[in-house]
Image (cartoon, rainbow, N blue to C red):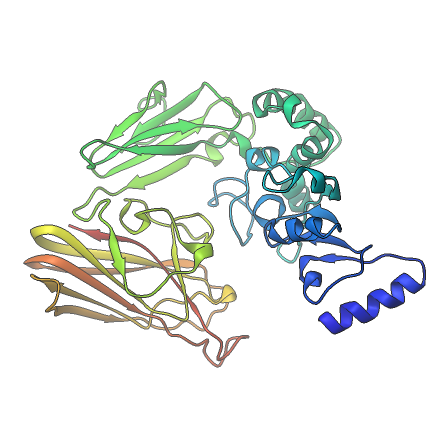
Length: 409
């Protein structure tokens, strides 16, 4: 690549033109007039600006519009991570770590929408709008003159205008989302419901259908200290109403919020949340939802120390199967228990079949039920198939294993 870039830039420059390319072109050296588009984060853009190259910021985590923008259960069939309207709006293409005298080399920002998974024009418009409006203010408005709350208020008539022009924008910013705080006794959560559209009309239900008889107006954090299914919707949404209902199950179990000591390192890009394997939340069919712990080539082996001897009746854990992006269920799962953390006894072993459907996209569950067993330590081993099978397009290459929520009762 370095040879090609250096050779072709000489040809381009000799014909009175300049080259522009992704940040990989930094490898091997560039002509002074080359422009760099930084997509692998901001580090490439910073390095280029420090060498006096013009830079266009396009980090995938902030400006890749092929990433989903709302609840993955309702979004188009995308891959990647979540990138909300608010995250786009709050992006600043000038990194604070870049020296002031070098900031002039950041000439703008660019969004990307890769369309191999975009089915039609309506879906393309859905992925672009209104995140494109947010990016316009990012690059055309001074940071000290913009706030997301003000933008959200102005967005409503703008979306009506786009609809009148027969565009198909997304209203995902009206979806109900949540944040949470752990209770002081670490035995549950306070759940905070919100929308990016700042709706004050969120209704919810607990372990009940979300209908007029059971719905409650959200006015304060919701305390959850036992297994709970929470449903909620923004009744001020004029577009999704009953089609996009927030629905989350919280599992408060014996391993809840306990650390898992892992033998093999996880993928940094898919590290999940702190204590994500025991946070009571089960990952969705979207691998970028922040709940999955990812491993490339390696298997999973994790140990939970309960601090004292407990009775174990059931054990569950969950895996994401998505062969198209090298995600396979494990070859097998086995669980072991110990009194001292040194000597372990295997109590169950379960094999999994490797699907030959490259389009499969599902959560695969391991479940084991037993007569009560006493133990202080629990070890879970999930064997990665390690290499893609012969029928797969990447046959022989390392495979990914994604695990979430080890539930112990």
